[in-house]
Amino acid sequence: MRKVNIIKNREKSVQKYRFTLQIIFSLLCLWIGVEFFLFARYLESGGTATFYQRPPGVEGFLPISSLMSVYYFFLTGSVHEVHPAGFFIFIGIVAVSFVFGKSFCSWLCPIGFLSELVADFGEKLFGRKIRIPKFLDYPLRSLKYLILAFFSYSIFMGMDALTLKLFLDSPYNIIADLKLYYFFADISRFSIIVLSVLLVLSILIRNFWCRFLCPYGALLGIFSLLSPNKIKRNVSSCIDCGLCAKVCPSSIKVDKVNIVISDECTTCMSCVDACPVTDTLFLQPIKMKTVINKKIVTYGVIGIFIVITAIGIFTGKWQNNLTREEYLLLYKNLDRIGHVSNYDEIESDTTFTNNNTLKR
Ligand code: SF4
Ligand code: SF4
Image 1 (cartoon, helix red, strand yellow):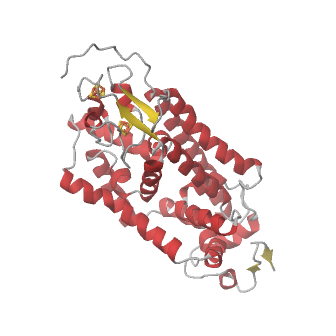
Image 2 (cartoon, rainbow, N blue to C red; image 1 turned 90 degrees about the vertical axis):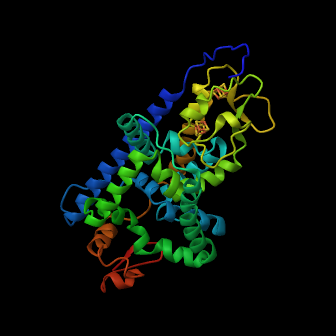
Image 3 (cartoon, rainbow, N blue to C red; image 1 turned 180 degrees about the horizontal axis):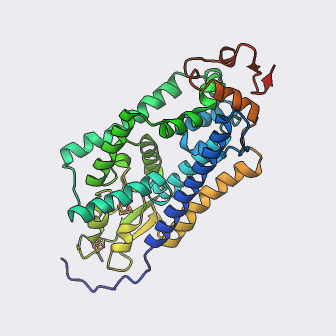
């Protein structure tokens, strides 16, 4: 360790703010889950139970549909009306990643939060971090990019505005949220096995899902590379204690670089908080001298996300325009949807017009 005059870093850690945001966001998702459960109960009753509005926030769990909506928006200039909340949530997440790196993963994402808790538990259980050897880490990390490439190729290469519209208007896309709900509500033995394997791997290896398999994380990783704000190390005041690298959940060798340029950095600020020397590790825009205060990351991440989703809410584009009768009809055909491609096939005496209103 190099001997320099250490000015002790007395800046407050932002980890408790991060933890608070993670809890708030997870509770919000739980609330959405409960509302959606009540909405599904209404559909299951055939419309006789109390009606609960479908929570639009559920569309945040439909990233592929949202990606298609975003592409549709770029091709046509309009927000597709079936899952409009998903569109705004997607844009919000990408915007956060563009400004503050892959921060959505470590500040807001409930799966990221769960992965973190599970990994903390694993480390307590085994008393140490298990690191994957480099020769395995790189190919495994590329898996999520392959999954993303597969979806991106299918969407961007295979679809024009008309094909996109046909898919986005299709019953399959409309009830993708219900399909997802029943995937977990009526979970198959095979899915339980897969999820259990993922859980065990996440206990053993920190952020197994996020680091190796999540295509959303891959996409945000690409945007984070484009972000102008990076973690920087002041080499002249660094005492080479290695604490920053030790706490990094993404196993980045922060103590060996001047600027962290990595698709795996989630701007969690753990390294900055752990650094014992003042003004040695900080978040700073490239080619600028101004250091970004740690608290600005907290307010920035949540602020950007709220502003973009609020645009959707206040422009009246948050809720889709499907009626409960339309949902009841789609629910009746739930098992068949996926095998049929348009409304005419789902019930011979009932069809929809192009703008998704029922026509009897
Ligand atoms: S480099 Fe720092 S901010 Fe990035 S993931 Fe590692 S600890 Fe978090
Ligand atoms: S925590 Fe990292 S940046 Fe800070 S002094 Fe130690 S090695 Fe240097």
